[in-house]
Amino acid sequence: MTPRAEAWIRQALNDLDAAHLTAGQGFHAQACYLAGQAAEKALKALLLAAGITPPYSHSLEKLVELLQQQGLQLPGLAELHLKALTRMNSASRYPQGDAAPADLFDANDSTTALGTAEAVVRIAAAQLQA
Image (cartoon, rainbow, N blue to C red; front, side):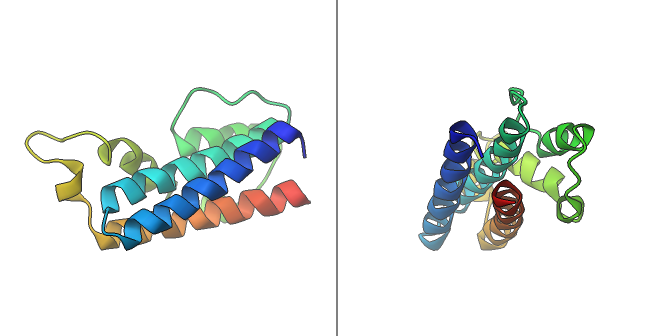
């Protein structure tokens, strides 16, 4: 693993830890955002390890597609609801009409986001160690 890919997976793990802390304190919108960031950084670590400069994109599906184009098959990722986590990434940061994200996200949302992000980070970390 390259030092740059290692830095990205370390930050993914750090974001995941922060997501857990914020969810535990009831900041569910922030937890969803950090969970999305953790998943995104883990996927970008895989791209870097494959010698690809990650695109400026928050779309987890697009990042997985780029990995697949490089011949990297990670079947566990196909089973995850990445589109939902991608949507949370922006919806958890900016008000929607008169509703603040803090009003729109609850414990169920952060639990779902954390579960998906944990799986992505776990799959990426295992691949990087292989």
